Length: 114
Image 1: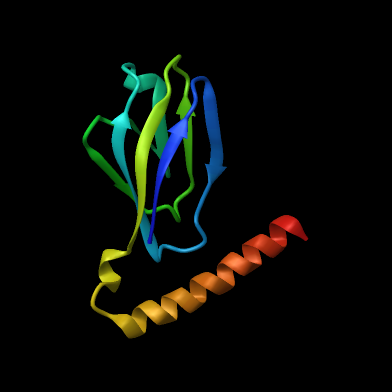
Image 2: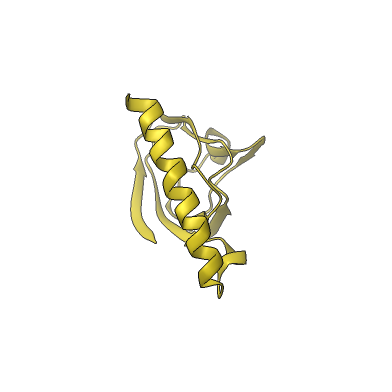
């Protein structure tokens, strides 16, 4: 897993991207959220969402997603990566998916940088 603080400065965006596999999901715990939720939001697939302080936003990051902070305030979330819920308690299946994810990640890196 991975746990990080994710800070997004005012008037910035994270361009559309996606994870290489749905092996993991991403959770955002809203910590510092600008007042105007309509101007600070995340698109996952075709749907836009806004954060709320103290609430968790959970999504499958294999879907294309992007983040916009069009406010004058910073946005801070605690970002957690967790195993896909259907993999818990199934180590053999998790290992198979992990190997597949590693291959896909390597292919994506090679495509991007070579």
